[in-house]
Image (cartoon, rainbow over all chains, first blue to last red; front, side, top):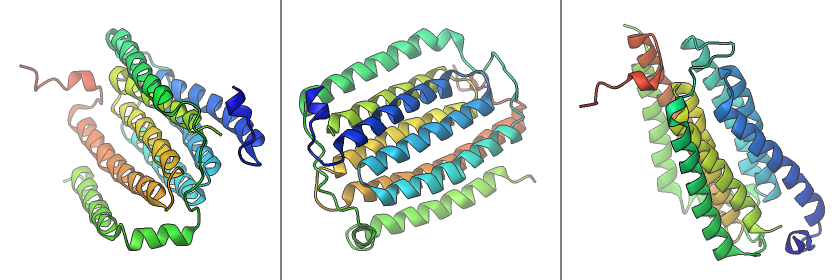
Length: 175
Length: 99
């Protein structure tokens, strides 16, 4: 706790407060996404989680990724989910058959095991390490990196987006 | 600001997403849980990227966002196709592959 409050960067205290509030909202909304009985509410809680992830990017001084998160996820992907909900005529009110009740104990057990193993290994390997903020947060350096070091992955991603576009059209059109 | 606070938050989100994938029966809700998992991984990438000079972590996070967008597009098209063929997107009823 003392390590958490130690002022390693000038903005540490307000940043930690923002992180705490954001983390509480995110965990609550994420649990609601996987437990709520209303499909549309699940999509709207997903917006809160995605906005919280964007807040975390801002706290990590990754502004460009944060803006991309807001544009792509909240602007596009959530709308796509709402389209999917409407087009599959999902029950818009409360419905009880969204969950597989037999799988719930196994799901809770698996989630707890995953969380215990990852959290244990994270705490034992990183302990009280501070965020170093060594990464550049300038858009110029990110774009330099994309168009020089990661040029081939970038081209592959664009081809993959084209393939996904054509694939989605081929799958979803009626004929 | 500890690096572990971001990593542990990502671990919690990841575990919640795994629970959603295992327990949800509605195809669209399973895709939402997969989005939770991908976002948890993205927080990890940006947090680890902050420990190193250069912009590699953020570039990889951008790639993951692009891949997630493509995944949602194709995934929802598949769910729509299942709905059109079977009038239901209950994943428990898709058991033709069961021996």
